[in-house]
Length: 228
Image (cartoon, rainbow, N blue to C red; front, side, top):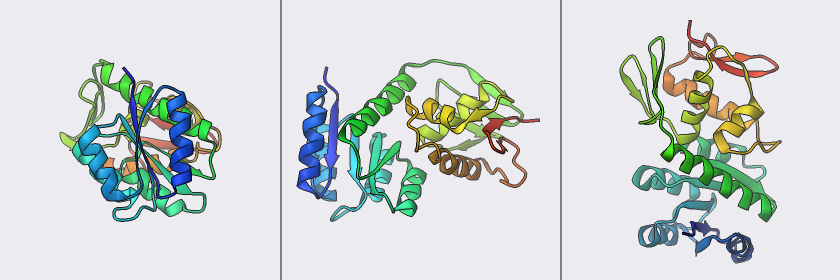
């Protein structure tokens, strides 16, 4: 059964190019050119993943990401102008699974769509036990995290980064290794997005970045989970 992708951009040429590449890879493609059109398409077609430009008429990509995550659990890849660092970080914080900067290679976009779907589908089918590190509890089967019995709401990417490190406490992971664990593929040049995810993760866990209890920085290398 073909997987479906919703492509949303107000630039018709970008929509046409991405749609052609995705269809050539066997995807069913729905399209929209504004926020309201995207909402309607999700309601009617329930795609497997959405590819959203940030700057959209009607409802922007950030708000669509928030809505689609909350109401449908829909994986989202945001498309942003290369200079829009703030928008990119906000998009990651509200739950986007990945981002692509303009100008981009359509082949890379297709690869990222496949990587996110592999990760999401793998997470749905995976079974695992509960990892406990001090007052931190990670339930792999339920994809649920608790700190002192307080449920911590994490995005898919944040959960995957945390659970990857928690599976081997004390082991140091490079940004590229964590990117591969979170996205299914390691694309050089994107590994610094891990810093944004770790920042959000620490905030949600109540971790002090200066003296973290859970996610610790290993300067010049990467990160580790080490609850002592």
